[in-house]
Amino acid sequence: MKSFKFKINGNQYEVDIQSAENNLMQVEVNGSSYQIELEKAIIQNKTPKLVRTTAIPSTDSTPATAKTANPSASKGSGTIKAPLPGVILNVHVQVGDVVKIGQRLITLEAMKMENNIDSDKDGKISEIKFKTGDSVMEGDVLIVIGG
Image 1 (spheres, rainbow, N blue to C red):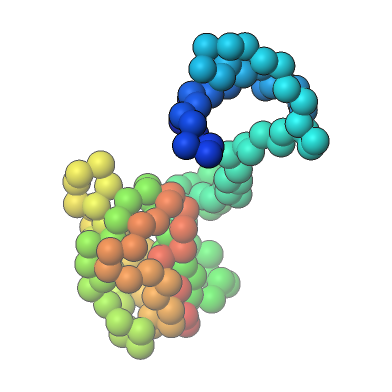
Image 2: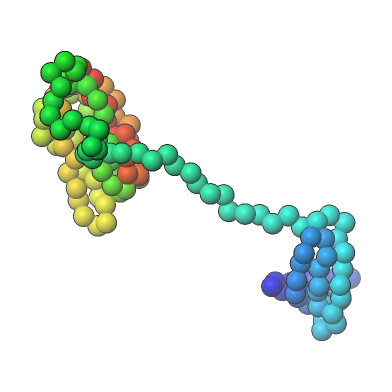
């Protein structure tokens, strides 16, 4: 498993840990094998698992989503989400800018390609959540467009 070198009172020791379970260890010190018992059980550190909620980018459409505009819905408000994971190369708008449908908002580098993220609605930029150089995941809200 692991090897260590110690110097105690001028004497050199080579210790090889061969196995470890709970508070029992099998070690080899300078070629001699020993079974030792620790005062406390060994607690294995585990790598934490990151959990993200599933996000659907604004560019995706689901069967429940109408593909045409809803005349009674408020116009010019919503969010622009990252269609895929990447790094923001350029933000082409600022908070307070008025944008039109199809206007370029952000340039995103993903898989060594530049992807332009354009507005899918008319409105005024009320919030920009990321800046140039930031990494984003698929579905992260990049820009909020207010009415």
